[in-house]
Structures are given as C-alpha cells and as structure tokens.
Image (cartoon, rainbow, N blue to C red; front, side, top):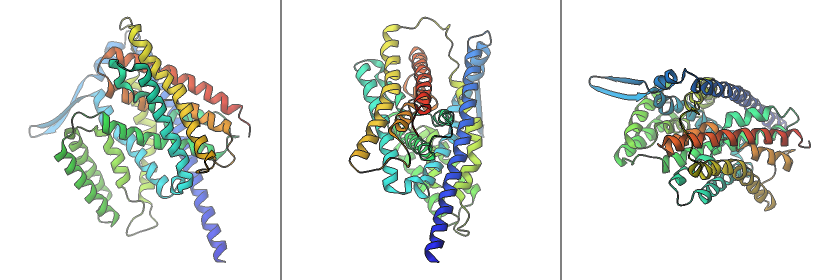
Length: 401
C-alpha cells in the first residue's frame, strides 16, 4: 500500500509538472506570435512618414517623484528598465520552480540543459570575438549569447505533436538557464560603475525579506514594497534595474509557512506569465525593433565584422555549442538524452537556440551607444533569428520519432 501511494504521488507530481510545462509552452508560443506582430508593426511605422511620431513618442520624458525627488527616463528607457523587471521576474520564478520541483531538481537531469546552455553561450561569444578582435565592436561579444525563450518555444510548437514532451522541456530548461546566465553577464559586464554601499544595502534588504518570507512573516504586499525599494536602489547602484526581477523571483518562497499546500511562487508565476509574455515582451519588441532603413548608408567595414560576428555566433555558435556540450555529457556518461529524444531533436533545438531576439536586443542597447552599431547589430539579430527559426523548424519536422 505504501509503495502504491508513493507511485501515485510520483505520478501526480509528474502530471503536474507536465501540465505546468504545457501551460508555459502555450503562453510562450502566443507571446512569440505577438512578438512577430509587434516587430512587423514597428518596422512598418519606422519606415513610413509615421517614424517621427514613433521616435518622438519613445523619447518622450516621463517623470515620477514627489517633494523635489524624481526619476526621469524617456518612455523607451522606462520599458527597458521598468517593464522588463516583470520579464526577468518570471525568469527567476521559472528557474526556482525548476530547481525546487521540476526537471532541474534531479542533478543528473539538470546537468544536461545547464551544460548545453553554457556551451550555447561560450562558443558564440568566442566566435564573435574572433571576428571582431581589436575593433571597437568587440564590446558586443554578449549579443549572440542569448536565446529568446518565447520565439524558440513558439517555433517548436509548429514542429508538430510528434516532438517528445521531454524535448520541449529540455528546450524550456535550456532557455531559462540561458536567460539566467544572460542576467549574470549583464550584471557583471554591463554596469555603470558599481556602488558597493548601495549594493550592500540591497543585499541586506533582500536577505531580510527572504528570511521573513520563508517564515511566513512577510505578506505579498510586503514583497511588492521590497521590490520597489530594491529597484529604486538599483538605479543608483550601477547594475541594471531589470535584474531586480530575477532577485525577487528567487526570494519568493515556494510554499506558505502557515499553509504548506499553498504554492506562493507558482501562484505568482501563473499570475505574472500572461502580463509578461502577452504585454511586456511585445511592447519591448515594438519599442526596440523599429529600424529606420532610410537613416543613411551603412558602413560595410563595420557591418561585415559586427553583423557577421552576430550571425555566425547565433547560427553556428549556438547550434554547435548546444549540440557539442550535449554530446560530451552523454558520451562521458554524465547525463542521458531526454526520454525518447534523438540526436536530430537535439540538433533542431540547438539551431532554435540561435533565435536571439528579445534578450539579444536588450544586450545590444547596453553594449553600444553608437546608432550605426545598434542598427547593424539588430539587423544581424533579425537575419540570424529568421534563419535559425526556418532551419530549426525544418530539422525538427523531419526528425525521426
């Protein structure tokens, strides 16, 4: 009887995990479609007489404050440094769930997507640096390291129902780890000079909030208040404010101290996913992909290494990095392929990981201030993402099952 109850509990947990993964995949797929619509509208507006209005709107100052104290950003910066907090909050909540209750809880299962994500970030960066070594554009080395979870998962759903669910979960876990690594890169390499005292204050506040939350002594509104305070401190600390979203995701307790059956982090994740995937990310895409192709001639001497480095990194680096690290983990016996997955599936996932987009564009705006560099970089991201989406889908369509 005891073994039977244990088996039933294990099956229910697996079913809940599968249901959660399918819920995330559906939402990310919808988000991917909205991103494409947002990009199409932004490009249309940016290359018509409407461009001056689009540009003026994004650069309109919006000030918040009281009693002589205020924060002033233009709307584009409010989107990147304010709304994107919610995107990274979902990333943090997703990773915490996977670590505590999901695929990443099992060390042997976790090592595969983690290693694949690392390989899919290191190799693109090395390829980009090899092409741009000694140039001013070398500062964009992190651009081809990011995977767009929404578009990658959205394209995967088009491959058909014959794709094993384990492959879908592998891509989801890989993309989540990829996003977390991207956040670490942003925090370490793209800051405006760190302020140790402010960072220390943020750490103390965050730690106290975590401990209080773990004991059930900090209500949800308290977490919201702590998040606002930490975001305001982050503006002055030198780190990008959006990273606070990930920190808050890790701080959220998985279960209520008073009611162990109440899954706080999972409830917060379910509540935030629609807002993040259906609103925040498409708005970000609309604000950052309106490239005006009439802005002047492109300098080919810059475009070839910069754009070429990004395309090579996303197209070749991602696929070879993901596939190579997966092969190494499996051949050395450290990890196993996902259940029912074939190498053709892993190859397809590796190619789809080259869809950079959201985070790649986000890093572009952090890496460069030169408008020519930004235009070339975003064109490279567009080309690489479109190519990897088509090729990755074709590989998965014809993958044996």
